[in-house]
Picture (cartoon, rainbow, N blue to C red):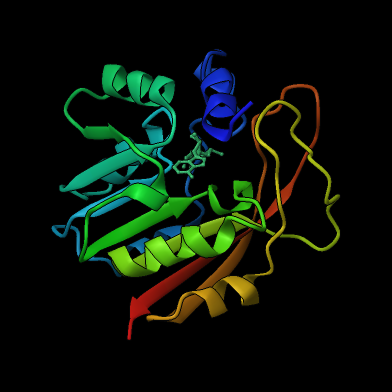
Length: 197
Ligand SMILES: C[S@@+](CC[C@H](N)C(=O)[O-])C[C@H]1O[C@@H](n2cnc3c(N)ncnc32)[C@H](O)[C@@H]1O
């Protein structure tokens, strides 16, 4: 099964039961977001069911475009938030330039072999980039959330090296408790804020 097909299957489930649906922004993340220009185009990569784009819009970001690899996810996003702008696209194929980027909980689903291409695209597109992913040395490295996308642990230093045209200006880390009904799972999220050199 190809990667986009896997995500199509995932979004055939009730999207409200997905572990990442409607997770609140941490106060650390809110503080990174406060430094972004709210009028500039903000690309939300891997936007899923659209709830993250909606939350960003409520925080005052007026020019948002959400992209996701999954047609089913974009279908849900358009239905739920008809006033926002959503399109089907892999991040690696987005054409926009000179925008700000919010990439949340996608990088840890990108395989080791695909990571360079993924980060290269963010690096080419973005002026300011907020990139958030799970990373924790003590956590199990195998796929943890079964049938909900495989989780890879990419070292934040490695991600920083792959951003060739950007400087990491701020980094925060905080705990995230995904919505998994029968299990107590906690992840450490790393949020990085990059600006163009
Ligand atoms: C864990 S969900 C996170 C959704 C959303 N960003 C959030 O914070 O709630 C990961 C999302 O990334 C999407 N995705 C995975 N690989 C992608 C890629 N290469 N390009 C674009 N979207 C991708 C999946 O379809 C899924 O919606």
